[in-house]
Figure 1 (cartoon, rainbow, N blue to C red):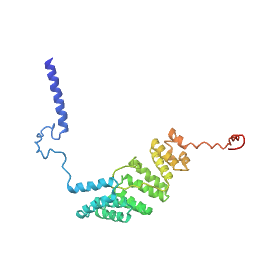
Figure 2: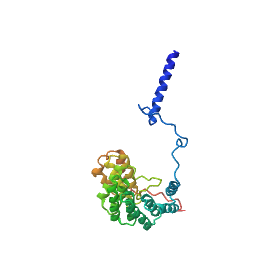
Figure 3: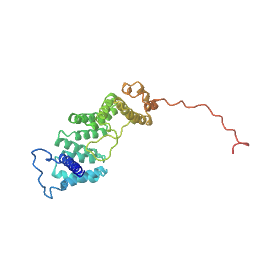
Figure 4: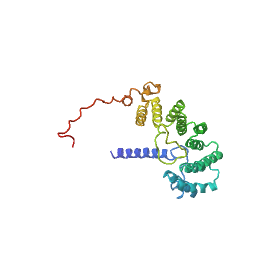
Length: 285
């Protein structure tokens, strides 16, 4: 019995060793020399950031906290040493953009593009400047440039859809929104933090905007998200919800109870006059 227990313990130890060897590069491979002992410095956790990296991280944290004005001088200082750093130029553009200083934002986005003609984020953000200036055709042109470089940039499709919506080009708007949610189903959800690609928050006709989002999710067979945006369209006063009943994009989700509940017309108002209460004796008090 004792021998069997020792044998089982030895086998368990061997299994544990094999599992550990698979997790450590260079171990468990035939003919691979054992790992060399590392110095105390090399065995520490990942190397500390450089002072320059710490400064950029500090600025990024300020941006995430919406302290845009405080981030500007840090990016400017870094750019003194790296005047053609496309990422830093784009970040500084965003810092100005978020303060509605569109001229300065545009200048830095353009500098970012000159520094790196293949930096899609800067084209998208330059389009956002044009959108905010209500130059929707120019905005669409910049989004198209961004997508020519980065065809899977869901935010650029989202932004382009909003520009088409503002131009009342509804077929193009729907196509752009549909592609956006295909690439990233969460692209229309609000997100915290700080990124290098701007997305539009507001549109003029929110009811129509939400209806198009519902239509986009319906075309993917996602009844839950479709119902979510149909409710938002209804809450915004969108008057043409009934169009979903005959729109081919909604065909796959129309039988869903949550969709039907939203699309049902409201019951007619009760216009019957109720009998008035009898006046108190002696007239009204």
